[in-house]
Image (cartoon, rainbow, N blue to C red; front, side, top):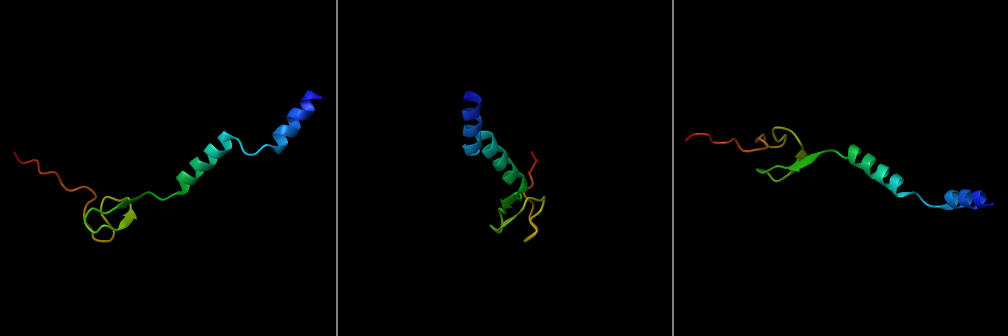
Length: 65
């Protein structure tokens, strides 16, 4: 009798924490990686150079001493 109640409770229960966690991980994998360009301020795909204005993602370092 106890197994029947456990089975019914499992059947009627909502999604578990693990299900929610897996769904969130899948959603993050499908989301494109974007950045805000430091020069033009537009949200663009994460690349070495901004496809909108062509500036580098990181300003070049001045290594002169």
